[in-house]
Image (cartoon, rainbow, N blue to C red; front, side):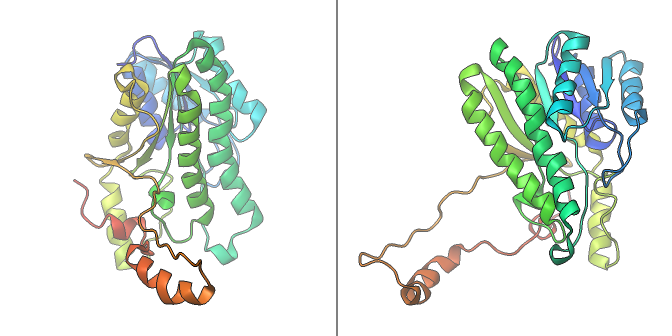
Length: 301
């Protein structure tokens, strides 16, 4: 489905990104395996994870090159896109998958915890997409897939930085879809469920947490790759501005916020009338304080 195309997959040194890169290569794409090789929390760096993915692709007869530049800075993100042009002469698809975690309860989260996660996830998705957009615009084609999370779409405890970045990515994707549709450029989000390095840090100190982790361990990263390949292929030429999820063998389409209830008062509102009239009328539509685990409470199938 991707014969003749060139794809950049960030964070492709392991987990979901690696599986997407491998499947894209298997579908005929030439792949830039972009991974800085940092730890889960963003420290250090190594070319080994990207080289390992490249070797796996080549063992299966595919074509790949690596790039170990960071997504979290304007200049280095542009080098990632340039790597596709230097090695393969063009760029057709970008999967913004690179990420780190700095989990912590909100009132204890540090400035560095916040800025580091926002820099990689949200800024990184913008920087790499912005670099590729110039080439997509010129050739009047291209596809973005941005990895989001139910941590932002629904909510999770102890992930204010990650949740804010991941929900921000959905707004970025929609804006790209709107701004770039005149150039036949598509932009979609994918929220994966998978047991990987990004989820291995989930605590298992309670019976409920142990059950949640056991469910995750059955959802291997490769289950998320088919949708990413489809979204970057010409078969998805009319699919843009959407937020999808992949959970074991389930495919999920998420809604975007829309007005669900409106109240009107001809004479205007006071704080007292809002308390007495508006809130009781609106309360039935209030969003619950649920989390991803409580909302998706059935076993993955």
